[in-house]
Each structure stands twice: as structure tokens, then as C-alpha cells.
Length: 66
Image (cartoon, rainbow, N blue to C red; front, side, top):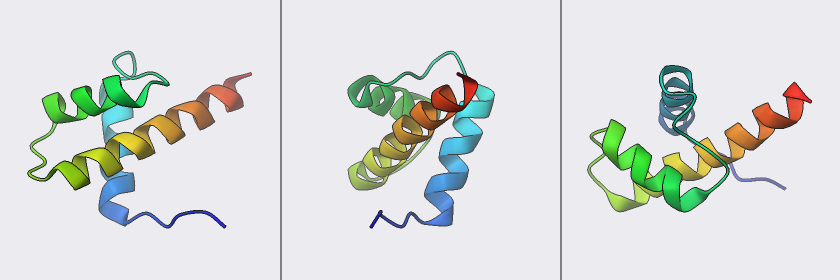
């Protein structure tokens, strides 16, 4: 069973990938820094959740492209 993400997390992650497609990659640590740079998320937990979903969604998009 997978994790359920809130709409805010999914929406923010998808918007970031649409606006900055070349900035993100498969690495969670670098995505975490980019999320902190591009958004004004106030808590570390929310930043990490968005970065985690960005990473998972990026990998999913890469698999679809093949």
C-alpha cells in the first residue's frame, strides 16, 4: 500500500516541475534544496514531503517518456 499525499503537496510539486523542469532530478537531497529555494514553505516537514513527491513524480515522468 502506498502513502496518501495531501492535495497541497501534490499540486505544489507538479507546479514546480512545470515551472522549472530542468532544475529537478532523481536526487532527494538536491530536490529538497530546490524546493526551499523556489517556495516559501515554512516548515521542514512540509518541504521534505514536497521534495519527496517531486522526486517520485520526476521518476514516474521519466519512466513514461521511455
